[in-house]
Length: 259
Length: 318
Image (tube, rainbow over all chains, first blue to last red):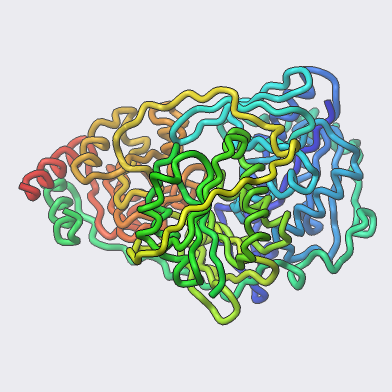
């Protein structure tokens, strides 16, 4: 079973995230890291590969620093990495990102399974997996909280709002996983040492046959008109409970017409 | 006037509140056409017409709903072509966003998700979204193809305006490829009888401070007619189901009133509730970061404060 895991290098959610003057995400002024939600996809790929035969390739699109995301995945145990690096990609929207990923996956070779996280922790749109599936002509089963490979197909469990569903699909398929699916491993010392010898390929757009006019901020299918930092919320009244905290709370709610 | 397609948010034929909100938004942008995929359009017809749907396109082919999102994206792509619609509004939930994603690629159209407001602009709809855990506001527009916009619940106050509400059946062509994934089993969850978390006007959430006992949280929620949410810590501890998790990896809610009980307010949680209109917190720890966000806070034991507040609210309601 050959698996490609798509990962993203994102600004740390714990830091002060911001936009730059051209309304793109500021990736310079903040620390970056492998999107936490992608670690679950890597872990799941490793578990499947370890249970049988196969290879796990980790794929990222992003600036120089994004190589760190690939490195972390290799340290966890992925077999090889592919980093799509091209200045023309900067500011790309989701359709363009999915195009680059799709062409990269075709070049890697047709995997049996493409795994992704449930969302990135910066953009949080959750649309790239579906766009990628559309471009690759694959079925997509998303938000898996359990994943089983059975023969020629894959079976997942999804916890929805009104029901818990079992979903089956033929392979190849694209599956996105939630943070409920597993407990991602930490890279071991051995893993960190081994990662140094693992192959990482860096490809540009020309390697993928993608034209620069199909990607980048100028060719996005949407435009950001304006970004504004929200003023911090002004702290209201905080009272210590002296036996009447609940009553005071109810009075506040009544004054605000919630009661 | 341009046609605006609205994918009707419904479960088993029962129209959900965001459908009326989205029809209200659609009227700002053009002529609303409701797209009803699945059985039950006949029953829903009057309600959709009341909120301004001029046309209701019903797609009752069972293949449309048996195979997750891919067939629905094909149906909408066919309808965009057939009607020449320049705007498509889709509910911004996980299935909706996936349908929209596939539709955007199929029709080479720009996609905006998680819109909390949509207004008519000079060259098409202009949207507003909250990003980076609600710390920034972004306004966007679509520059290519039809404007495909995923709209969050509570993005507009539903306003009635009678539309013709003409029902017509559409027979789609669904490819074999779109049928590759199938729901093979579905186990309904026990219904709490409380409002849906992302649609509720009031949400009361519990966290680590409950120690696993959500009864004061639920009691207070029920007095207020609120939905119940939970922090990641409470969900990870197995105290409350994941579908109730509020936060970055759970639901993003934006109610009129959010009550956080026994929740410290880590960034993970704030990402899911920071845009709530009014925020109230009860926490034993006066240093808890949640207090930085509140309009009103009580430093105290939620097991004392919430039951007393529940009783006081009941008293006020008479």
